Length: 401
Image (cartoon, rainbow, N blue to C red; front, side, top):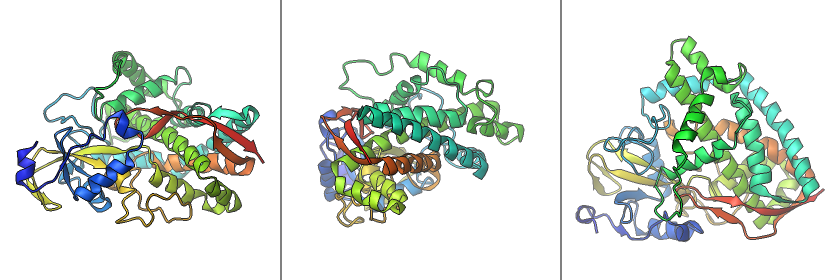
């Protein structure tokens, strides 16, 4: 038991949120964490944790006191060498972060976004028609993964070969947040091969001249970033945009199949499309937690925190906090879900969220037109990654209109 945490009046939370038995349904655990206090000591991992909406929002917005530069996982980059070069956006604070974010904002120009929308719509039509021909599908593999692995890397300008490696690399990224002790295999066995493949495919010469990757490298030509920084940004863009989108779509399929009245409501009122996706993100978001590191000694939520402390930030818990959301455990697509924290918040909000929303709008617009009902027809298989709430497979039946 952490006597330092006790001496500061911080309650001890003894359950472990990062093991499979907790990941199956983490929300009762989150409720117990929230009820214990605005900030708790996470006994299983020797760090602080916040799970209430207001405190999560405050930590995520305050990069001056809660830094991302020491890593957004449990490892502290001030003490431990990271497994790969840190992202200059996701694992950096201003002013370094600002330079990279500015390049991203410029790359996501209206013209580039418009071209991507057309690509997403075309691919969505193809894949939904194929899924309807099959009738019984794996909602993750046959639809969410197939859609994103084609449309998103195409938009970045990535070569078409071996894109499945992005999934394995994504698993490594997520496992690194809280390294699993319960796996029967080494998730980093292919780390050298995967890292070399990603690095090679994020170089300027590997990318098409008309994608987001080339637009990021334009920042080198303008003198805003260096060539290695551009490669780092392309890697970060792929990492942020791929896995979260796949997971969020698989989770949304599960929501609509589990609550068919909400699918009927969406089909009757397609204008609810954007809000429906936001509600799915709030209700069952892809990233459950990330971490920040304190930059000094200060008071927060009634606790006295020391410098260089890790704080686990439970985004998914905040999105189910009844202190902020009425009927928080109800999936309701008419809810005003703006303000959820599934994609983070503040300067470190997900860099790929604009495209994720475009992808969702394109895909669900086709589904609403062509699919009368979706249902889960077998036990979903969980994808056990400490900080993710996602499915490895989701057996579904689609009923055409």
